[in-house]
Each structure stands twice: as C-alpha cells, then as structure tokens.
Image (cartoon, rainbow, N blue to C red):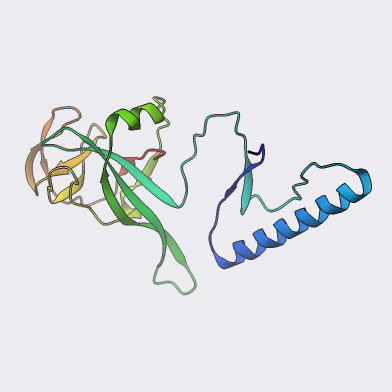
Length: 191
C-alpha cells in the first residue's frame, strides 16, 4: 500500500509525544506543499533516529522487533518445534531513576512446522540475547515438560522434565541439566 514503512523503536510516553508531533508536522508540510505546487508526494520530516526509522522494504529484514524476544525450541519427546515469546519490560534496577531492559515470559506456542519453514528465512543471522535479560521459563506446549527453555551446548533450545540427565533433540548430546551459575548467550529468531 505504501513505499514508506516505518519502525517505531520506543514505547515510552516521551517517544509517543515526539512521534505525534512528527506526524502532525509531516501532514502540515505535505498539505502546504500540495497547495503550492500541486504535488501529492508524502513529505516525511526529520525525526530523531532513536524514535523512528524508515525501513527499506527492498532488503530482507535482519533486525528483530526490540519489543519481543522469540526463541525457537524443540520438544524432547515429540521432536516438534515450538516458539517461546518474551515481551519487553523495563525493570527497576535498585538505582534511583535507572531502569534495565528485561523481557518477561509471554508464552510458549506450538507451531505448524510447514508454515513456519515456508515463511522463515534459512539465513542464520546469529542473533543472540543474554540469559540474564529473560525472566521466566515456560512449560513445553507439546508435551507439558516442566522446563520448556533448556539450553544445550550446541545452542539448541528444548524442553526437559527437570534437573538431571537429558538428551538434546537438536544434536543428540546427553548431558546433565541444572540451573546455571552464570549468564550465557541464547540464540533468538526473528519470530
């Protein structure tokens, strides 16, 4: 419908104010240009790139939505794929007027693997998220295992029934699973 596709980066109240000022100024500027020069082209006035940016639709998107984290996982029992979704949440850090970016568990969902593969890119974008930014661990939506976001050394995410020995459905490695003492990077997808 349009050649102008925009990505709204922030969702705080100040960003919304700036966004609406920008939209109003663009409409006003376009109206004035049409009246004076009989043009019907949209004029996108400048706005800070920290609030909104124009997306080049001729290129394949390689940037995930910063409001969500999506992880692709595999059920240990059925070997079926599912997605785990986290939603951005600004958390108090304990330091006055300072918030940290965290992502709270939003849900885990079975997917139709044929449709998912059809609409997904085969390119590996090497997108990562630190485990310390993710809050919550879902049950597996395929088999009901208690832990739906276990992480193997191969990078695969899968379900396990609890702490102890388990096999990764991605690579077949058998290992001992338990709570990590440190943080680590997790592979994420575009959704």
